[in-house]
Length: 166
Image 1 (tube, rainbow, N blue to C red):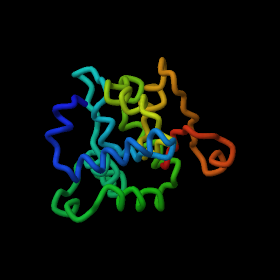
Image 2: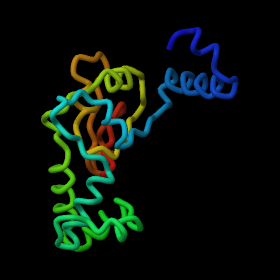
Image 3: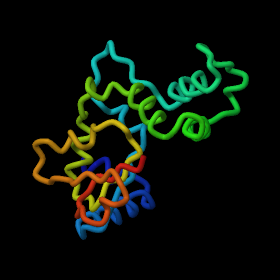
Image 4: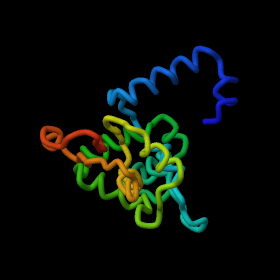
């Protein structure tokens, strides 16, 4: 961030950024990366990356056995609630498969914001993302991250880590 941009920020925001910076360099800061961060990926223009609302529609259609969702009924359902219902009906592995099918992971590449985020000295990066953009974004960086995909792995993988929370 350019110094002029930093100087133009409100004082309360600057102090929060300073605190994050201090904890980063004390090896004490972690970050949570949610699904929206994947929108920063490099994706060919002809590839459609589904948002959570689109995945929610897919889940709804599978649950109801229909090809198009009833939008009036869908308004009252969140993607997370639908995912829970789907896992209860079809099993967690089937839910994981449905979500993975919705993400063109093999046709997405980490974007510049992925590289910038990963270049900071985070203790851990927690993510709910199913894609592997963060893991692949580490390629060519000085700092490497261990990837944790189960609670058992937390015991023996050392920081810095990318902890997959799904």
